[in-house]
Image (cartoon, rainbow, N blue to C red):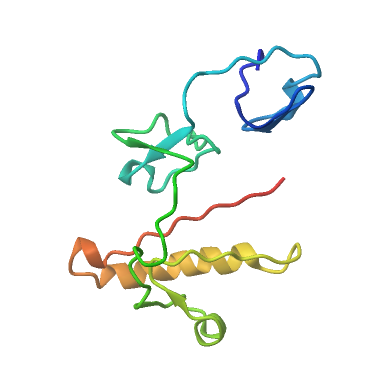
Amino acid sequence: FASGVKGIALNLENENVGIVVFGSDTAIKEGDLVKRTGSIVDVPAGKAMLGRVVDALGVPIDGRGALSDHERRRVEVKAPGIIERKSVHEPMQTGLKAVDSLVPIGRGQRELIIGDRQTGKTAIAIDTILNQKQMNSRATSESETLYCVYVAIGQ
């Protein structure tokens, strides 16, 4: 967009274009000029991202400066088929007895936490991440270290 806000075009129709905006929509008005970047959406990846807070495009918003040495990965990639995936066979202890007994989570598994406002979703996620510190302190090799990625989507 002319304002510098970026987005990705998802619907291309004769009279309309549907765009997912990666920034503040208040800077966008009807009739604004839009130009393509000519590039496929990619984001930073790798260990340089550990401990950082970034926006939807991987730009740091935590006030700690630019990311150090990092690779970039495309956002839209074809997921591997079920047969090609490594099976989830090792449990991950959240440290929350109710969760560990009712909803066992496998190491390497993604977990979606949904619910009404003010019901403790963020607290469960943060407590689980903090409880991994004890597990990682016992790790004897890099392959035993557990990395947690927390993604919050909201208004």
